Image (cartoon, rainbow, N blue to C red; front, top):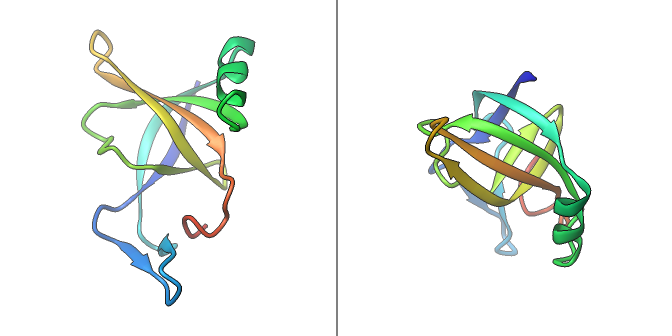
Amino acid sequence: MDDVAFLPVAGELIVDELGRPSVSTDSWRQVLVNFSTLGFEEQQRAAQNDLTATWRLKVFWLDYEQEDFIKFRGKVYKIYRSYLNANEEKYELYLANRINPTEVGA
């Protein structure tokens, strides 16, 4: 299914006084995505790495610049794995709930 997600704008990383990185809330760019839920096998593979897998998004290859986070449906997720599907010219992004809320601004 089609939807919209937001990737952080490159170069807009902010580091607070404690050295924690974040991205300001107005530093996001909109991208079109196809989304689907994850199967049991992918969820189990992520759980082995202490991640809670949530979504798989497909984004046009020119829109993805190896970002670590993505905002989708009002929440910020960690991109724990990406795969370029050359036949579709899209990256498959595998998302997990972020563990540390200070990793990136929401």
